[in-house]
Image 1 (cartoon, one colour):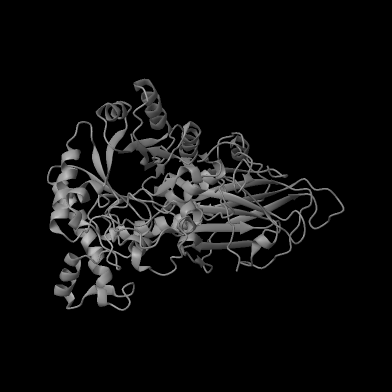
Image 2: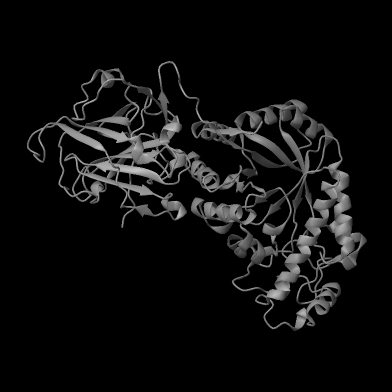
Length: 582
């Protein structure tokens, strides 16, 4: 069955249709007795301010609807009153049975989330005949939510008035009007009274069939950015005002956004100061620098940004030059010391050796205590890629649809002996190493021990530690032997570079959702976005939607943004009611 496209009438002070989200409507209290006849003639309706005209569900940048729609709202002790004006030159309707699929006709739809959490929200639809379909959603479809069709809005009063003739295409009609009284009692959740909530999330929708056979138009009060009304986080706000009392808006959702940046020694203080100022004003909260320069870190912090030191962990040519025996070894017996995979700088260490973890932890602690450093950031905290992102296979002329021995590490003498003591087996004699869970877990645990050692060393000194990791714990385990969902860190930056995997926003969102679920509230998730892979502002919005709507605490940009990108970020955050951490 097609997913229902319902919208709820939310009253908003009169503004242009291009107003950015969130839409807000101040519904005034009324003491007048309102007769539900569809005519909207009471003084309360005359005093109520109409909402902005509906726009395309995808956003105000899409073509404006060819027929205007607006709503008004007032309330009293018992009811929320909704009045809709629906411009129409040919009023039609055919569905007469309650709870039939109303949007097969032209319809008007209301969505109500009194509790503001996107759970157990309500939908009421009707056509020009006044036929009603009402239901409850346990949560949005995107979260595998199911509709509850046996819910009825008990006590609902609804009437339609038609300024024209029904189902007569030979004349020209003007509009149809919907007037409804929604009982507060019908919207109770358990023993919770919706009247206790003075600010509701709501939306309204109009489905219009401009020609028989479609496609249908979806015109809404608060656009969701895609053809899906079931995105409660994008709905507008309705405030229940009483005289001079206007309820405060709920606080904006707080996000913390980052940039990974390489040091630019040729930039002047003035250029860096302007760059950091622009980043801060756009909604960036912190910079992760690859390297350290006291001058640059100081300028970063003076601009109100956090300054973190991004430092390589297991990929350490400097340590291998002093300790060649520490090199990771592949299944063919080749060491990264003198035979690095893929590129010359891939000089990875074996994580099983205790002295490796001790040395790395000491390195990180020393750098964490440098002036102006707010935290350390682990990078290359893994094995060499046993599987590269698919878009890179052609660069090296390889097919990694199965694991290849030259990219499968670590089979050094130290690891082989440790695995023999643990299991009684030599990993070189394992017939299917990519399927042997004990051997896979051995290597996952080896990296986890290194991370834990570094974390505990820094935590004992009160220092912050985060990590750049591969996207989604399941991909990370397969591709680079990272079990980061079980690391003790407070923040992770999954490198969800969608272009590397020939994917788009939907994939990124699923990866973020998996990551958020894996850490289970114990750590923040800041998905990484490869800025050059962003096509345009629409694509930019879809990528950020996918991140934020799936539970990300913010995002991190690599190789950008430029000034235009910072401007896009600022517009996005302001239009979606996100408040950057300052």
